[in-house]
Image (cartoon, rainbow, N blue to C red):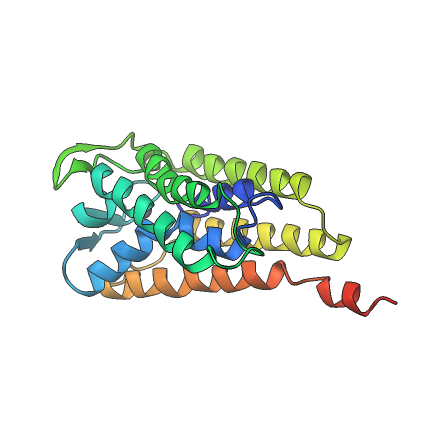
Length: 227
Ligand SMILES: [Zn+2]
């Protein structure tokens, strides 16, 4: 699962809970940020194998700290507490349900990975591995990613009031994410090393966070300048 994770970020974002979209973009990939960091440190293990599954080259055979069910729950709580500590004092960014929503967004990553991954997600430590393996079926997996993303963006546009220019920017961002997913799923490429792969994860995910931040600024200046 790749861009499908962002559907949850778009869907959760509302003026009521006050969590910015870019924060939710970090939340829904929080487990992968931890995973990428631990692979870089040599603590978690990854093999990149061409044709490992129809839709993915990643054989993530040892990731008990970032992707077991037990640690996913723990990381969700940690993320909620971090949000509470950092944003609690700022009423502009904080509402009572916000930490809960952050926790749900972080945990959603595990649920969506459970659908897509082959049986490599441990319940705890490195045992009792589960995974429904949708990534063994390239087209259905791709379709799920896109349908989820589209639903998330539709909800986002419906639940948040914004200038038309920002609506356009959100749709363009959505299309860009679809193109990235097409590249990831369908464009053949030589496997990179494990470290290069997770460095790419860090770079791409962070780029999307920056774009999510920028998108929510689109149209604000014209509003301020209006007499
Ligand atoms: Zn993951």
